[in-house]
Amino acid sequence: MGTGTGAMGQCGITSSKTVLVFLNLIFWAAAGILCYVGAYVFITYDDYDHFFEDVYTLIPAVVIIAVGTLLFIIGLIGCCATIRESRCGLATFVIILLLVFITEVVVVVLGYIYRAKVEDEVDKSIQKVYDAYSGTNPDAATRAIDYVQRQLRCCGIHSYSDWQNTTWFKETKNNSVPLSCCKATSTNCTGSFTHPIDLYSEGCEALVVKKLQEIMMYVIWAALAFAAIQLLGMLCACVVLCRRSRDPAYELLITGGTYA
Image (tube, rainbow, N blue to C red):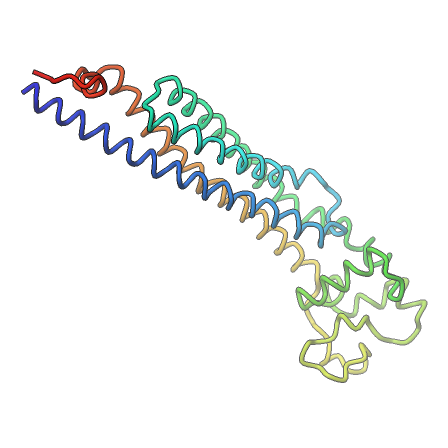
């Protein structure tokens, strides 16, 4: 009976340790993925920052990069603690994982809050950006609008006719929209209102909102996925810790004795 208990303890602890080492390797991969997601959010927001005045929306991206960096350290601590079977190291590993897990829950909550605010923020600032368009000068507003209209294949705020209300349109008096409104398939497009078939018909506001909300969802899903992995890591570490403390068979296994 005692031998059977010892064999079961050894089997359980071995499987938990194997899973734990495997999870630590995943943590290293996760560190790179999370840092990539955070960097992608920063780069994309840089292209759309004129349509979005609230810089606090970048907080989830900042946190997720910090979590990614921390995950690399966690993987190192976890591997060393698991291989050396250090009770102190495993306890530290569980505590850090718990803190990171809480942080990722905060990221998810903030992500949902800011995702809900995107539409209001864009609606509040997009008219100002279009009013600041100058066309010829390589200023920030001009670059931002031309980039968005080409990338998202849109024109104006709600439709291309919105350009008629802008300062740029009234000053140029050429009855046309910027060339960035021209469809990629139109070869001789001049932006003229007389040939609306050459222009993108969809407005940019809805597409900018959709794009920014998609970016925030990347952060939310990344945080949720790795929070689930961390829960499994904490569970395995706790199994190793508990059996190391309470299972006589495991203690004899560590010291090289025999269980009779």
